[in-house]
Length: 259
Image (cartoon, rainbow, N blue to C red):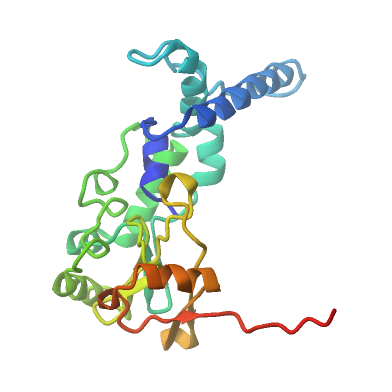
């Protein structure tokens, strides 16, 4: 799914990028341009599009050693870029599966009114570069109230009344499943599990959390969290019964091993 970091990268906002990440894109750019050069020598092939076209050679306020990495990252991930188009452009921004609505940050009534399918299509068009050349992301994925940035239902006390009003606008929807805001105590539910918050901060740069899985079974009648004994120990460390409200950790059954 499309989240805030996908939007930031396609939009050329790299302030979260690490030096090692820029080095990887620098290497990608080197080999990609070699590939372009080789393809241009092949008879019968169209001259391939150069994603580095119009990408500035120097970036003001950035150390020179990072210029090539930033240029390559921008070329790869810009709208209609070779990586963004292939790996990101067809990802949805909002998904409904059964009675569950999945979104990175959250949905407000204004988003539902605008149209979930419409939002998905406009983000796809922007990332793939088929929106007539517009380089700015759609407004509903920018700002604190955006579908990929919202924290109203996942940070602190959940706005249950607003959440309920949003879900009532989506036929058959019983819960909203969200990421974006790291849950130190692990996957949890609020508002009688109408809000399910699943970002456990797996990345080393965002908490280095333990893996957990949200499992929804029997058409949504069974919702549980699958984790390990390490997850249980961490949950005890961050024990906060106000955020569980029904979601329980399911441990894998012990396996007997005969030596």
